[in-house]
Length: 114
Image (cartoon, rainbow, N blue to C red; front, side, top):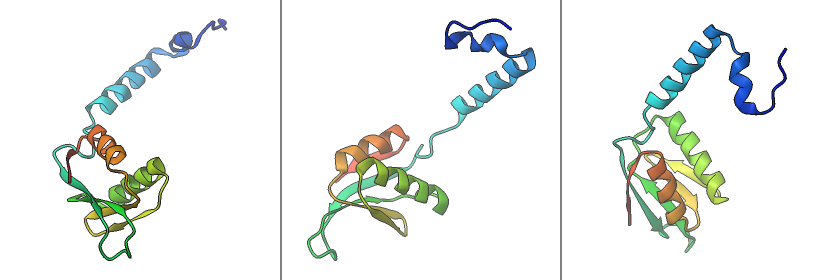
């Protein structure tokens, strides 16, 4: 077995079939459209019904429940805050508009900050 001097030489250890499979998987990953492609969402601050506490609301999400839950989990971890999902909205505790707008744009959403 050949000795590797760096990680770029790992592909030399793969068989031809494994290289083909790896190439197909990479191409498939590149073709996969982002979850937010074509979706327009609004991000705004809300204080109503919360005894003066501030939440950042992402409204207009039309995603399957499981995808919305994962997105909410990722946003809460990124902001270091709690939150919840209410119908077609995600609420994140605190004022986090710039962080959330950047993340949603990276995911392919068309974001309107309000």
